[in-house]
Length: 116
Image 1 (tube, rainbow, N blue to C red):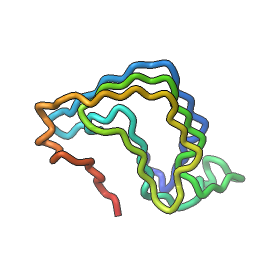
Image 2: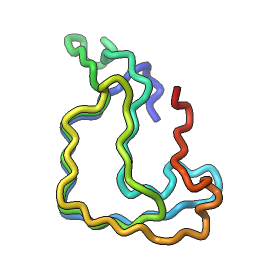
Image 3: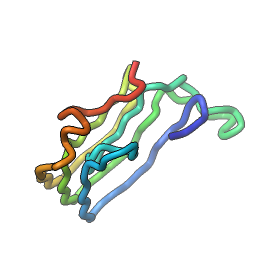
Image 4: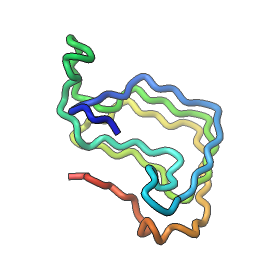
């Protein structure tokens, strides 16, 4: 998690990989999702100390994920607000959901902690 008021993830390429996830007990980051992107709090600019001439309305953009085989104990997801996720492509994703002994810990749902 970034402590800045805004942040930008862009120009990400992921390809030809295998992902295996599981739901863990305790206060772990993630909930067993093999692919998950979330951007819900974004103040529409990059701090001047990082890029003084860059302003953007996006939090996540230009992400391409392809040729990925996944197994996981939860669903995959992309969640944003006010159009702050753009140009995300998921191509040739082979996903198999597996049973979880810990699914009751997560309440059979995504945990959108701090989503407002």
